[in-house]
Length: 510
Image 1 (cartoon, rainbow, N blue to C red):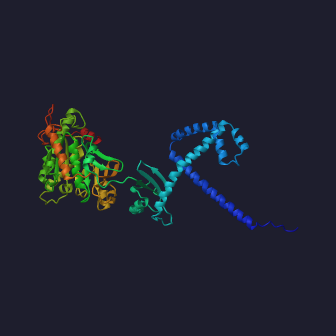
Image 2 (image 1 turned 90 degrees about the vertical axis):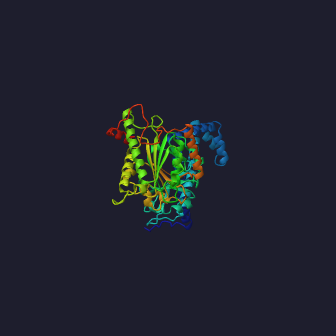
Image 3 (image 1 turned 30 degrees about the vertical axis):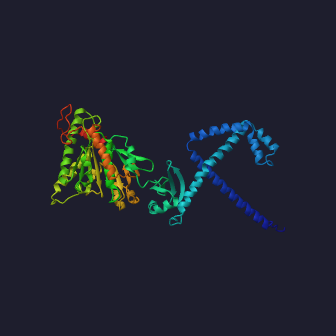
């Protein structure tokens, strides 16, 4: 029996097989790409309720299309040779339900594709911008943008797959990233899965200058002050909600300017306020404030400690009042007491640890102890601390005081460590060298802001307006003598009593 040999494929057959393989691959890539677009469209649609909200009108329109046989006209226009009369009749006799379902299904897919193509192109753009940096890990893997989520009108969060690269390496290229994306980079964070990095982009850039006079209209709440303009809105805060705050940053960053505008804002927005300012540089920074009937300025360490003693004594008297009346917190609008704000400029000078042989050692220790007690208990007594300093450390401001300060404004710091001591992160060290640019932190809220600029002439004008309001009676000091050590007599006699555990607990909880 002779051996039979199978016929060998010709060159033409090989070429055709190659063409079919390439065509199959191309079709697979196209299908995968369009499937990815449809999935992106589904994601853009979001919830099932939103999807149904669009599906209902699509179904109604599809019914109208089928009723007037517009789908048949469209098919014939699309390809007269393929969709000839016999084929169109076959489609027509499928019935209304199948025709409506078909038209609605195809329309929905087209709609999802349209919804998905724009974010897909945008995602490709983000990837191209990221590729410009040439970042790669040890295995030559470049970071991939796997998702883009719009946070609001101005901000987009990118989820980047970056195994073996890490967030710190990407942070180090922040300026290059901003140039490549042509957007401001607000944050670069880790995801719970360390393989992923979050990059938050913003199309809204902060202004380099904000005028206090224009920002003043945002002070609508009593006892509030202006923090600055963020990328979302003007940020203001009621000091009663803090209740204490710290201002920090290197020279030239805007710390002193922010401190003055904060005090000016509080004086303008608060009807019943006593302000005690401590300036260890001779009182020059606060001389314009000293002209007001409700402001006192301490210029020496002796005067500063005396002020703190008086405030502590007033705080004890207010706790006696709270216990007497059975209430938990002083409210100046309802009770016969003013809000008291203690502003300390260059707090590190007043509270700096001193050697025992230093002549001011006892006064410094007393100042630290008094401030700690006020920081711990002052909220319920409507007494607030505002501390300004260049550097923050346990040697300059005791950690027991820092633990009770929830509001923090940090301008540019020279090192990441300086920012970490104030904010718990290094964000302030990455700020641009723009005067007034800072990071505001209050509880879980944190944002970059441009603080308002208050010129000396504008400050004098606002302070003169406040002074006239006190002269006309629009604003009043309830404790008329302006001395916090003799509170205004109330309807019930006030006796000196020790603070109870219940009162301390209530103050802490509030």
